[in-house]
Length: 501
Ligand code: N01
Image 1: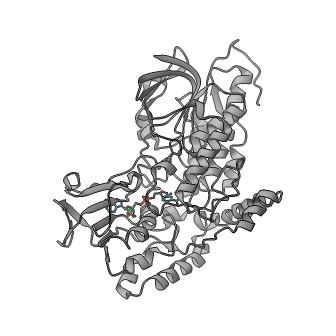
Image 2: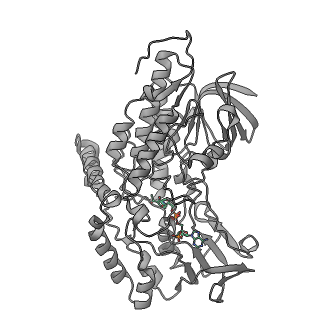
C-alpha cells in the first residue's frame, strides 16, 4: 500500500514529537510519526532501568512551550519524564498521527517523483509512504551497543542491556555483574547493590563523578510555579545561563574546570573509605573529556561489602563466568551490560539512500558522520535531522537543541511552501565550510585534548557528536533557514523570486 503524505517523521521521542507539534502549529498537518516502540517517549521509554533519571535539571530538560510545574525534584526520575512526554503529545493533539510498533526499514529518494519513498514494517504489514520531507528523529542514543567480548553470545545466565531492562528478572540475592561505568551504570549500581547477593562492577575507564545537588520541590514552590507569572520561566532562564557559563571550560580552557575536579575528588573521599578503591576510581584524564556524571550514591555502593570493582579487564565469557585478563574467574547469574549506544554509526545511515541511490553510510564513510548545521546533507534533498551530527552537549539540555533544530526545519518548510520549491539541499561548499569550522574548534576542546577516548569520537578520533560552542550560538545560527546556502530544486514555474519566510 502506498500512502502519499507531506512529511514522514521518524521517532516519537522528544525530537520527533517536537517536530510534529510545531509542524502542526504551522498548519503542516499532513504527517506521520513512525516509531518502533509500543508508546511514545523514545529514549525515555527505552531507558527504564532502576534509578533512571535526568542529569540535567528538569526545568530546562523540558519543552519551553510546555512548562511543567509538577516536577518533583530538580533531576526528575524517568517515569515523570515519560509521563510528561505523553501529556504534552496528548495536549498538542498529535497522537492521532503517531504510528507505533512500526519500524522504518528503508527510505529512498525517488528522483522522478521528487519524493522520499519510506518503507515501514508494522504489525499490520508493510506500508510505503511517499513523502515530500523526511525528518530523522532518533538521536544517537537509540541503538544499544553490546560489548564485543568473546563468548558473550553463549553466556549461560540472564543477560541484558541497560536500555532493554528485563523487569522480569529478580536480582534479589543473585550474583550480578555490571559491565560499564558510564552515565547509565552509575545510576543503576546504587539501586541494585543493596538487593544483589554480590555485585561485580567492571570498570574500563573511571568516570569523573561530582555530587548530585538534588532539590525536592515543595508544594509551595509548585504552587508558586503554577500561579506566579513568569516565575518558572525565570527559574529556567537562570539554570540555562548558569549552564552556558560551563562552555569555555569544555571548549577553550579546561583549567576552568578545576573547581569541578576538586568537587569530584572530594566526592570520592566522602564516598569511599578503602584507599585502594579510591585509587582505582580516580580518573587519569581531564575532567569533561568524557561526560561528567552526578551521584552521591555511586561511590558508597562500590565501597559496600557485597560489591567488587574489577579493573583488570575482561578476557572472555565462559558458561556463566567472566574470565578476567588476570585469569580470575567470577561466576554470575545476571549480566547487565551498560555499555552505551551506537553513537558514531547511527542506524538511520544504513537505511536512507539519497540522490543516485547513495547510502548515507557510504557518504559518511567518505566525509565522516557530518551534516550542515547538524540538520541537512548534500545529496539528500528535503531530509532534516533532529539531533543530527555534532549537535550533542556535555553541559546543557538536548531539548534546547531539539527546539532550535525544529525552528530551522519550520523555517525551511515555510520557505519551500512560499516559493513552491520542489527540493532544498545544502551546497557542498556550505557543508565543507561548516564542518571545517567545527573541526577547527574541536581541536581546543577537552574532548580532544583531555587524554581520554569516549563515545564522542569516531574510529578516526574525529568528534562527530558534540557541539563545540554555546547553545545560544547554536540557536542563533539555526534561527532562520539560510536558503542562499542551499541548492534549490526546480520550482514551478521555473524562475521564482526567492522569498525567505
Ligand atoms: O553509555 P556510555 P551510557 N568492556 O557510553 C563501558 C546519556 N545518558 O549508557 O569509558 C568494558 O557513557 C565504557 O567504558 P569506557 C548520556 O549522554 C544520560 O552510560 O569506554 N567496558 C563505559 O564505562 C551518556 O553519555 C542520562 O572505557 C565497556 C560504559 O561501558 C549516554 O547516555 C542517563 C565496554 C558505557 O558508557 C550514554 O551513557 C544515562 C567493553 N567492551 C545516559 N564497552 C541522563 O541522566 C563499553 N564499556 C540524561
